[in-house]
Length: 347
Image 1 (cartoon, rainbow, N blue to C red):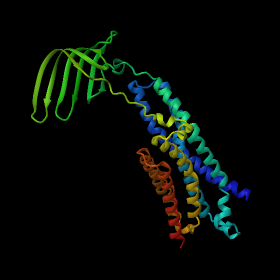
Image 2 (cartoon, helix red, strand yellow):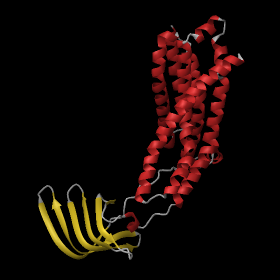
Image 3 (cartoon, rainbow, N blue to C red):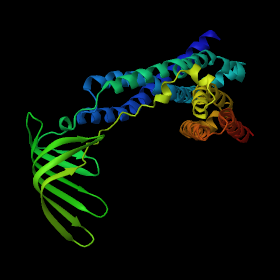
Image 4 (tube, helix red, strand yellow):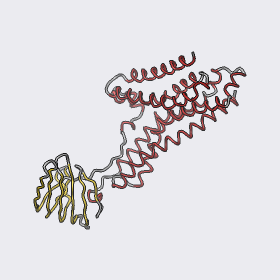
């Protein structure tokens, strides 16, 4: 039994780790693109990218690990079925329950790791990542504009400056923008950054403005000595939900619907591991040659559907629905569907 448990846990564990690495790389790649864009725009210091991604990694792992565990279970057991190893064990007198118990050490270990990630490691990591992101001060508007390059601005506008001197005055400016009814182009000899209360804008001097109405093709041209345009640069922000940084103990002591929803979300991601294990245990009792392909397909369908239902439950709980009720109903629904699937194909 010990040898069987080691071999089976090693088989499932290797596949689980491989799936975990692939899914983690895919998740981090999408975030890395956002961080690089923020660095290029001056909203984030280059040295902050690695610490932020490292501290947010447990948050990704908290969701990826149960999925990778399920993939490892299904693919590993299918491989044993194809090699007739499970049939040989069954012929030798090993019952289904005894065989399933061989996977308990790995299941228990993954469950404990998920609990540590959800309840302790992830909140601490998100808090550190938010602190690093907040420490990056917003750069001055002039620092975000590169001479002789078009820079995106607010209100669907672009700006081009031929030169920015040491006094932070731009020379030979071209600004254009558009909305549903108007196309605007502005030529100016210079511009200075001006602040008035909480508003920041550029004060253009000595130039011409062209206003085109696309519906009538009417072009209006006028000359100005001074003109103010609100063109505060749009800075891509790092999306870090500070709510995810709240300690689990604080969530347990609060009656706020959002806090309760987040608490049960964390609990549900931990319960995801034993629920998926149970689904594999009862469905793999079906004749393997009959359903091996279907079981591989169910990896995608069950995981995506299950997590999608959990996200829907979180939305309902955030809106004020009782969190234990909606999350509990979600888990019971998935277990009922799995058991119904087992009964259908078993008979």
